[in-house]
Image (cartoon, rainbow, N blue to C red; front, side, top):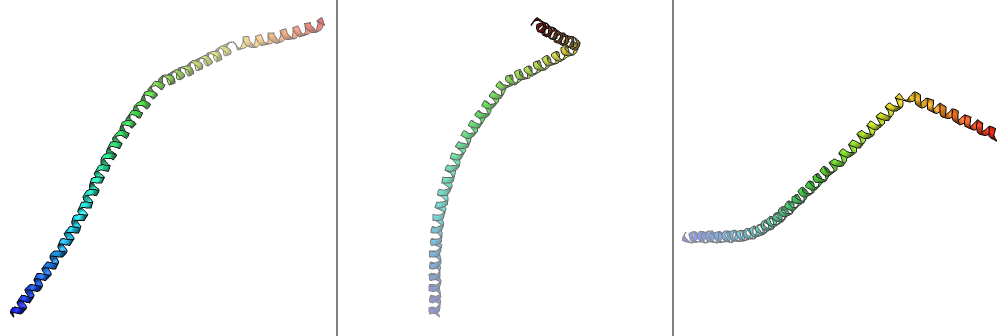
Length: 130
């Protein structure tokens, strides 16, 4: 019976030793994997830091561009106001001419008729002179 007891204890010890060996191998593999993960995380942190810098630079450039566009738009506002004023002036002038033509329509018609009459008289007079 002692032999069976010692044999069982030896078998348990061997099984425990095999289990410990597998646990050690698993932990070593896990350690290697965690080291790779740590390196990957460090690289990602560096890349994120660089992306952050580039994003900040891009944001500054975008803000500068927006300010430049705003300043140029403000400077063009004077040109737009001047063009609008020219349009108003041309419209006023056109209205004034239309009003003058309407009020002097009879006089203009008479002047044209007198001009035609004078041209006819001059043509007849020139024809008789020859």
